[in-house]
Image (cartoon, rainbow, N blue to C red; front, side):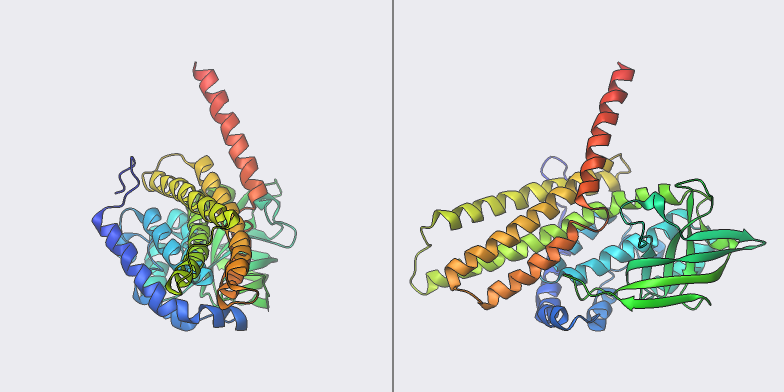
Length: 393
């Protein structure tokens, strides 16, 4: 476990982090720019992540999970990979997010059938929640699931579905009541008649991540594929966010660290060429603020991750970690691009690397709840805590 007073990992987690860092630097980084430029899903990286057991970190131990410190380990792996390729890091996050409703709400029989297909059969999972008319407003989805005998019939359209075109299993959120917010999750197999993959989205950043539309037209699933109790879908989605938001924060943290590494390399190169560290206050200020924001982000992220692993309430902290770290990554990448222009001139290779990181950082402010939504969550949780204390007092 982490020592909560210092946030220093145990030796096992230190070794885990160092191992992932080496793999990311040697195996993933060399392909990152090409993947971004050509916008393709990198099957080689997917295979590498399976080989290293990184796509089952949050699974139960008997199905390939690590057993303890799952959220901390997920954040560590995401952070190290995102330093070089945010799209590859996202693959870990969406596998954890998409499998959460199955692990949390699936029956033992369902888990015994499908978790081995995912862990041993190497099936990716997609998380089908967002719709053209329901993004941040999860309770506003229109996809329906109606009970017919021993099955449910699903109809609707999902968009911005990460892994939508490459997954073998889908966790699908659908309305099971006319009452707002009364929804349920269902496990749907890729081959189920009526499930169709739509267009592949072109994105500003994280272009190596497969993102598509998915259409559900009279999709029939067995009643036992209901995940949790009927009507619990919104609750499961919110619990999923408590795990995924620190991980998105870790992705943003990795992006920011990657950008600062580019800046430090440039400064170091100047030193090797006999040029001293430039006495430009703007460069010193950017570097100082960036490293401070990085350390502040790390504290929020791993504190939230520790609380999640301990089963303690941390909804507010999870939103703080995601919001703060992604805003920090956006600021850092923007300013590092400007500083590299001063140090190296317009159009240097490092500028192009950080430009990719800049575009990747923007997405961390948007998915798993926009940062505007995070601020609402933080404010509401703060008031809720104060009112709760007042009542007890």
